[in-house]
Image (cartoon, rainbow, N blue to C red):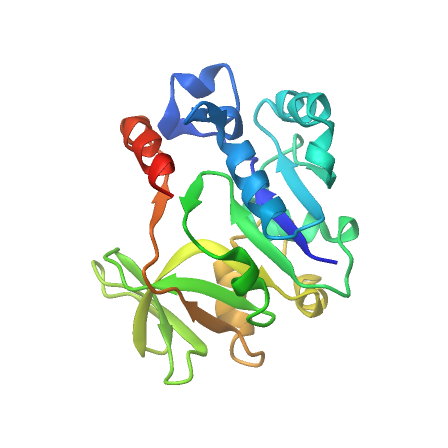
Length: 233
């Protein structure tokens, strides 16, 4: 079974005042909510089960999915209304909602791209989609594209070891075989901290996406740009 998780729990503070009355996932781009765009992209790539985590205006997301009959998919809600758990904690909490025999594609709700999700999913377990683009923080890889560290080029801070620098896209494939390692982690933690610790003993690889066109619709001033962007995908 092809399964995925959409991170839709965030407060969307950079999209205020829109997110004063709705979750970021339901902010519209090209006439449709961000959540719609990601669900349609996953459905077109053959994904059957999708877990959506919710927190901010959670009921609006639940109602939206129900009103659309879950778009004909097995969509499950991971309820974080009790408190935001960050990316790692969100995956950990949702563990029981997944089929543990299949990898899980993780996708942020505010990312639009031309990425071939089917190709990413078939690239192997524990895969991070990366590309050559400018950012402040880079993941570090060895010659075989194995994750070995992280670096902040502004502060010079390094976690792990230095190697080839590539920018993370916010899209990755999580292997359920890593769930037991999360048992000792707290309820709330970033997934990248987990990956950077796990990569010392477990193979976590980069998937370098060439000709990647990706947009993070995180800020109010990018909404108009996003409307143009979605029409070119």
